[in-house]
Amino acid sequence: MRIFLTGANGYLGGLLSEHFSRVPEINSITGIDVLPPKRPLPEKMRFIAMDVRSPEVSSAMKGHDVVVHTAFIVYWYANMPATERDDINFKGTRNVAEAAVANKVRTFVHSSSTAAYDLNMSRGGSSGTEDFPLGRGDSSSYYANSKAAAERILTEIIAPTGITLTILRPTFIIGPRNTITTESLRELTIKPLGHEHARLQYIHEEDAAAAFTQAVLTNMPGAYNVVPDDYLPLSEVQKIVGVTPTATIPVEFVRVTMDQSWKHSGSRLHPSWFDLLLVDATSSNAKLRATGWKPRYSTAEALRSAPSRT
Image (cartoon, rainbow, N blue to C red; front, top):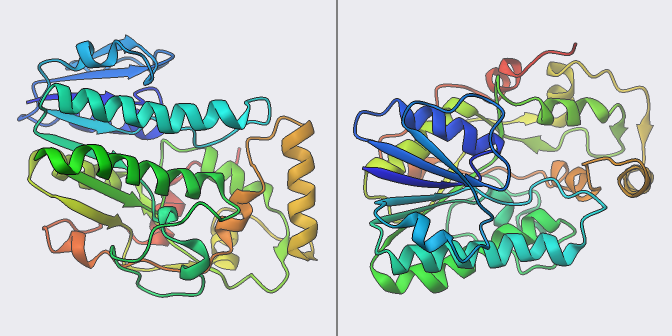
């Protein structure tokens, strides 16, 4: 089996390249990204410096059996125009999907997110399932809006072709290889007024990688939430990552402060990431569990596995 992996230099792409390289059924991995990985490549992996929007994607994909699409602008810096961000996320997704159709791959696995659900409708909900409506592009989160839109693009292009389209929707992924998430959480040194009990789910990177590996090896059409069995309130999440809030602050003030930091100080944390922490909703993993997958780690264990404060 030959895997074509986009976003190979990203956190998830790097994680998956390591896991896929250890699977006997996988013979080779071709990874693409605009910049080469800084870490040594796994033995089975070949890297090509390539933008997902490039017309060369189709020829590079020739001969592969499975496409795993992880390339996406997750952290959006203020010096990148929104038009460029959307061009990468949407034109890139469309280009990779059309290349997959042209090359008649067997399976297309897409890395989406539980954030793709309609955040306004899901707020305060429990154990949401995969048939919950996707966002309509009207949330405060560019990330959530983009993930929902990318799913629609893939469904439009891939679904009619007979290629198995697997959409995996992880919650926040965290683990030993992830420094950005814990660093970001530690920047939130306050208690948001009225939201300290907002429920959050974190999936361990090994559990997330196991779901992607299973999707590559087996026939799993449709969408699947990749979430742990449990959740924690924001206050407990902060405690686990070593944050002792110094004050209770109205959320409007936090948003303004984060917006200024994002615009003028080079922060990667657009204020909409703060809004995602406050949605206070949980998703169900029952559908993915029914395929044989099950999480090995709880939310607390996943958080504790991440790098500690230095």
